[in-house]
Length: 364
Figure 1 (cartoon, rainbow, N blue to C red):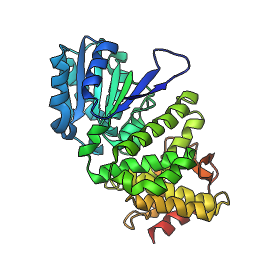
Figure 2 (cartoon, helix red, strand yellow):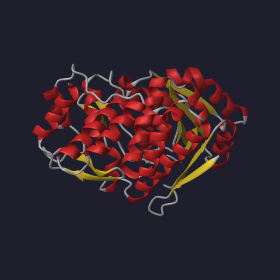
Figure 3 (cartoon, one colour):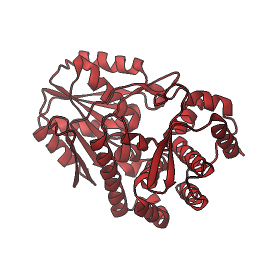
Figure 4 (cartoon, rainbow, N blue to C red):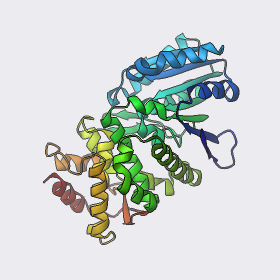
């Protein structure tokens, strides 16, 4: 089992460890009991992950004498709203949860965001632990303390920064992950390579087929590398005042496409199309070489992700969604652009016409 330590502002209570390994469930349970003592533990998951792993995980907690229960909510982005938070909170009260209770997020990005948000506001905050079961969550969303729920206007418009007490990435969970969900995670992995690590980008170019087969050693190394990149960024800029914004590469347009499609476009698909758009904008504004744009698009295709925007999505409505992005300033839409692979920067002066032209170009 490998360990990545997230050190936040020298605040010991906010710092935590990410543990990564395969077949580590027994060790996860022992570490929770040893290092994260609580009066009770409540596992919160969705009904899909709950059916696969919920009972087994709950049973393992009880087997070592811990007081534990489980709460499930419907799987999918549609459940990521304030009503579900209120339902979970009511169930927590019914189980007798108090400020000494520890919540355990067992699931993908939606579960992690929902549980983190609930933990940050329930009884003015209770501790929580992330146990991500998807590739997206293991390399990205479980790390860094971003929590949130969606509004009709867009993704994650209500949220907090609230760090978990620990993250445990058990790669064995990925064995039951559908190919489409695995590909969603590949989008985040490509993002990290593009913004931070040209060497990893070359590794992905050479080994994408092997990675898609979930080869254990390669997968472990890639997941650890992504965690190292994210933890380094979060340590410098925990609350996204500056550097952390580079982690949004591909996400500005991606979130708009997700929301406008009513989430028939998955997170990874949205990010993939958003990365292609950002690369093309970077090229058209004179920053990125055409050869790098082509490399990025080719790698995204190899990962089984889309490089074209569905024709059914209206360009003007996409721009309108972009104007609702929570990271905008007035009418200025901030894009993470590239000077080259491994060298991102923030640009808030992209003309709406250029964005619209790239969107239409990607729909052809």
